[in-house]
Length: 162
Image (tube, rainbow, N blue to C red; front, side, top):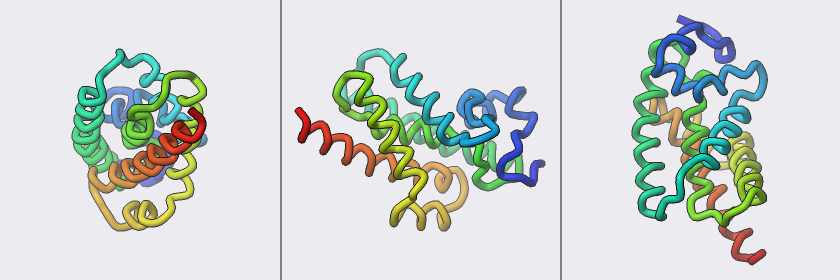
């Protein structure tokens, strides 16, 4: 068991569930683990094969469902409800942001910045969800909503600029 929301438990490096929940190690960053987790999500996004919107949406939905289990199991195992290093929720939030995003590095960066903004600032109702919903679903849902808000902004920027 771990008492701190910031210390990385040793199990991250030997338990594959914890390793995935900690964003394949990116959440073990000593500072700004959410930002490092989102950066890893952006890298994985770049490496994803081209997908139709339906296939991409299915991939994100499956990642969300898996994340409820990964994050909930890891939080329970390490004894910290929403450990800062659990960043699978950032992966899913960023991937939501990038749904049907225009191609190009510029859009990947804009999506990154928008998602981090909403994830850090946590405007209503994100902050309420973060504080009031527990378990794996609670870990995931605030980042899902941050991703949806960032998605709307990204799409608006794309429509205005194209």
